[in-house]
Image (tube, rainbow, N blue to C red; front, side, top):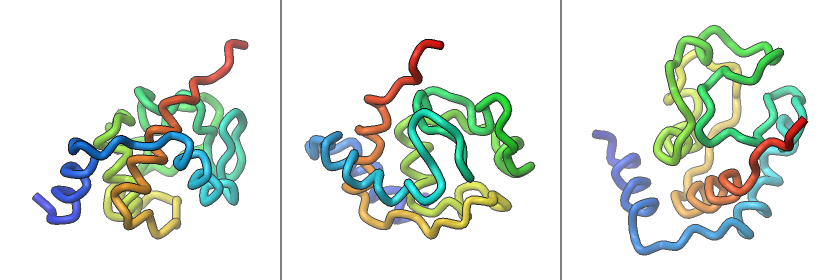
Length: 119
């Protein structure tokens, strides 16, 4: 197993209580390409936890993301947010990642609070 993943899992599974409020502030890093309730350059993030990667209807994903077979849960989001290009080689998401495991845990905690609105 990769050392950085072990560290991430240790933080996510530790006594560290992820802070959704801090995660909301960290979400500002995502604004250049993403929004919570609508697609931009990247797909919307509402309801991402539990969703199949490449699963937003009508959004044009990279072939790599469509083939990834991932379902976004805490572990897969943590791995992807740490290093998107390593987690899904060939993804068109060019963001370098979030190195701090606590920041990733906080961001994931925030995303868990954002289901998609009923339409």
